[in-house]
Amino acid sequence: MTTLTSASGADSRALRDLFGTFLTGVTVVTLWDESGSPTGFTANSFTSVSLDPPLILVCVANTSRSQGMLAAAERFGVNILSDGQRDTSNAFAARSGTKFEGVPRWSEPGGPPLIEGSLGAIDCRREQTILAGDHSVVIGRVLGYRREQGRPLGYFGGGYVTFGLGSDALERHGGAVVVGAVAALENRVLLVRRAGQPLWEIPATPLRPGERHETALPRLLATLGVQAEVSFLFSIFQVPGELRTRMIFRAALAGPAPASRLPDGAEIALFSEEQAPWTLVGRSEGTVLRRFFSEQATARFGIYWDSEDGGRVAPLEGVPLPWSQYGDGGREGAVPPNPAR
Image (cartoon, rainbow, N blue to C red):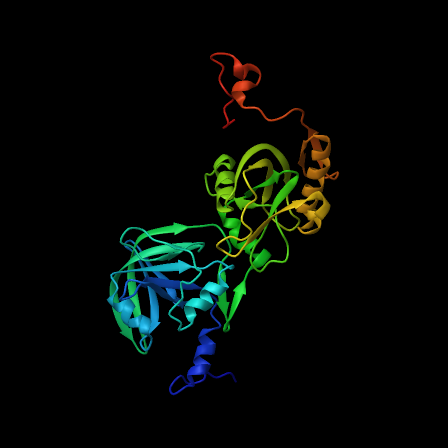
């Protein structure tokens, strides 16, 4: 017969292990200390409380120095970490006073310090502090927030969890289309490798509800710290086992080579044909890159899409031109085609 272990007088380690079987996200609570310096602590005890009014709560041990600072702070921040921010989580979990060293931050006027690159950043005003056993429950009213794309950093059983390719399942609610770009500079293409992932990727992002690729692609490239002119659609396909359709465009990078590492820990790099970048990505993206270099060599590009007979390519001729310089678009009074059609 199965029985429960009595919690009365139970070993605290056993209870901690029990609570650790609940998979959570990881946050860093940030604020200004008494001297006006930025500080904070890692917390996976974060919960949304109410939408109207917008309230959240965090828990902090009564024995920690952070408890006194948080109980006295008028404003504090909650930073929801991405899977590339393990080091940030570890730094803020330590007792060191240099937690923000090397961690990029930003803040709104009068607001708390916030960590750049987090999936979510929340500016809160402290509403109430409730003593609950050996912890304090601090309730905050959300004054402002910012959300970014990415994968979450999880915590389970005393260790970190990253979702990797499984995060596609978490992201499917965001839309049915992913847009990306084969961005080239001097016969090299730009690839990105997310923190903790073995494979490189063609830069891509899910379309947000109601968003068009004309805004999604510049947003994506801006997060990589690059500028590019996006031109033709290059490929439409689905990765085996994935529900989303991928639309990959061609893009020409402008300016110098990008930085090699992003604030969230992702790597970006340019690869030439001699480096065989198609061997560094997944199979479907590898096919895209092989075709890109092959078609670039002859300056004859086409649009590829999946089909039951192995795929089709529709050839394109010439170079991209603004509508105003092409055909009837150059005549006075001509109207560009309706992009909604």
